[in-house]
Image (cartoon, rainbow, N blue to C red):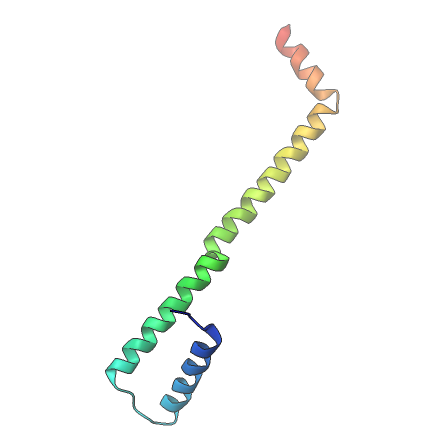
Length: 89
């Protein structure tokens, strides 16, 4: 079975327009429409990830950049040698 996202989006917009103009829908159509919307949102989350996953990746990237910068500064400065000499005394 092939899922056509554009066709389903068009169908949902047409149904919303009909509902706003006063045309009533039976419960079967409402149930089918709700299932379609849930399926679309699930596909969107699978494709692009949930917002919490994106925020987690951004925070993790920032932490890695900060730690890498600190490590770089320590390696290429005299501070690391000073700290090591303090521990060996």
